[in-house]
Length: 125
Image (cartoon, rainbow, N blue to C red; front, side):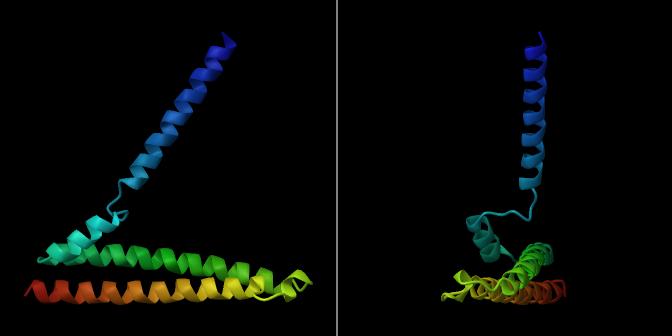
């Protein structure tokens, strides 16, 4: 009897977790690559451009957050000076490269969002 109760509780917890994950993945910010390309081709109204701009702002925030996390990791790796860290490429070098990549992508997403925001302003006139 106790085993069935534990099994039912575990099953209920798994179902609740899957529903929560499905609700998070259903957000408009998590578009597939094909859906995004289709939206970019077919956008003609101000609302379409604002939707694309909000998507790219969301991606910019993601990349900025990843860059911040990598900056912290880079600082940790830079403080670790050992024989293993003396080899090329050093772990700190790879963290720096990842940080630079995330910064570049965040800047690129910001430019795209600005472009679509400008298009939404011109489409509403």
